[in-house]
Length: 110
Image (tube, rainbow, N blue to C red; front, side, top):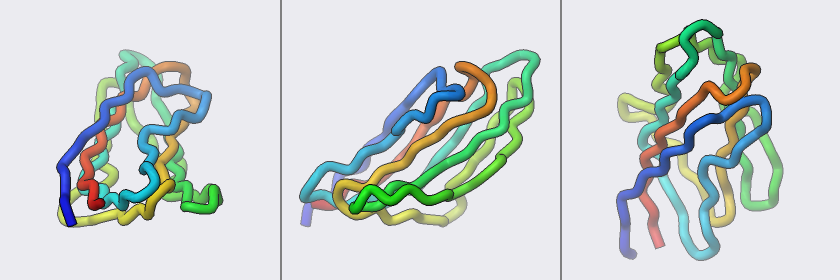
């Protein structure tokens, strides 16, 4: 069972929901880190994170996370893990246009 360490970086997330991670068929993943950064110099960003399961059901993972201007939030860290089955994913949106950068680290297991 091969495992591959990967990361994704998505910039400019705003009011339109963005899928930051989509697991392909035949692969499972364990998310080991998720960091969100507010790139705005002036605007507070309020972020929602959703998990999409293998049958396309969307659920709230974290809601209304306030991130001050020029600051970051570590959402998955310190030993926490989120297991995603094949074809599952993660989606992010915020209340401010184009101000969130996301860095996600995960392990693919095929």
